[in-house]
Image (cartoon, rainbow, N blue to C red; front, side):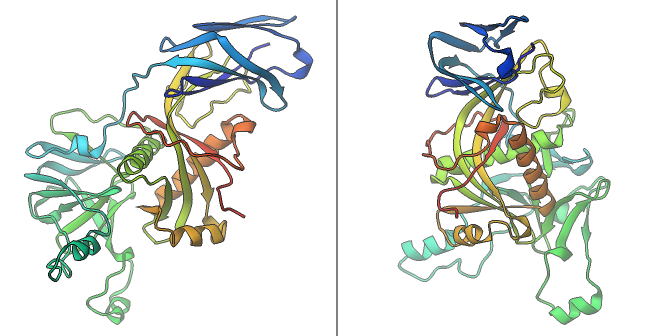
Length: 403
């Protein structure tokens, strides 16, 4: 008998749920011995020893609630002491520094998009309703009412899901290209002042991935999920696409929840369509998986093969745990409409293809969780925050207020 072990830890609460996923009812009974650094499982057929990572320590005397759940395995609650020293993918604000030369790469293929760019100012953009706030606080007419925030030649403006640069003096090698899909006749019918987002798409010349869009004659918007920014003189390291998307989305959710006390998010594409509804539950989760030697075992989260633990060890990942609902093909339309009119829901816009990639990541991650952890019909939200995020652990669930 070869068991795979799934351990979900809440670091702040120092509690964990241990699931021994493989044993069948016919293999029971089994003797389970829990020590601070390992787990021993004995049956009449075999004895299996599973070692936990060094940063995870179990409190054996705290084990309680042992039960067998069909389709899952053996469940036990226990106290866990866990540290985390995961190497993170740096955020854009950490990579982009004023007076420092940077190189911009396409995340999908590694093509250089902007070479050796140095910004004199790197500034965060205000919130979306900044103009309305100015009107509330000023006793005179808003001087910025009809103005837009566009970077000058040596500026870079950072938003939550994108950054703005002035494209007037970019050094492209070979650089992106701007796609114009309409004919001159159809464009002229729209009028000289109207320009569709489809006409302004900025794509990578090598892999044709959408990187952003032009929002004025001199300003280009690049999405943070499509670009990697590194200091000049450093070697470019290709990051697996799914890992990068999970990491960036996780950091974005945690950053916004911490800054704005916002826990519900509407993921929408650059085409304006809503793809996913997300509810952030917590960001202090640590996941541990030991796969055993079973060929049928699968990891709990979508990770590339080079990131998966081997059959003789346990792997740990920091995680953000969210609930989600897909909204493609008019699914959950009523709930999506309700969230669109709810000021407590924050919209996040990405390229439509990236939204579909994220939905696939969510679906695959959810399918690999133990069945009992995939759905949550009712729950209480734990307001826990952490900036120490590596990958995204997802549970597809029924949200409060859902029919």
